[in-house]
Length: 128
Image (cartoon, rainbow, N blue to C red; front, side, top):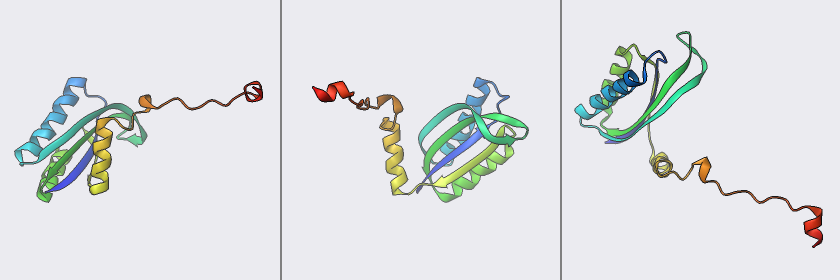
């Protein structure tokens, strides 16, 4: 079994409940195919880099899973069938990406946890 990560953008016209139902549908597709879903993240409504289907925003979602390569084809077929999916990308994760994702899930890269930077001393403080 290989490890995969898929990011997909849903139509911004959907309500919050419809968006969550759509994500759950894709998680069910993975679970029905005996895939191990490791992580599901909702990144929320974000601005797109360029318009897609005349939309400038979309609901970004990420699913990290481990499965056989055939499962990816099934999942991507479901993405293509669903009209609410505007774009999707599935990538295979190597060992470095797995380590990074594990650290990211633990919150090691949160900007809020950043320690305050040292401030420069004024000339008066240096004179003391």
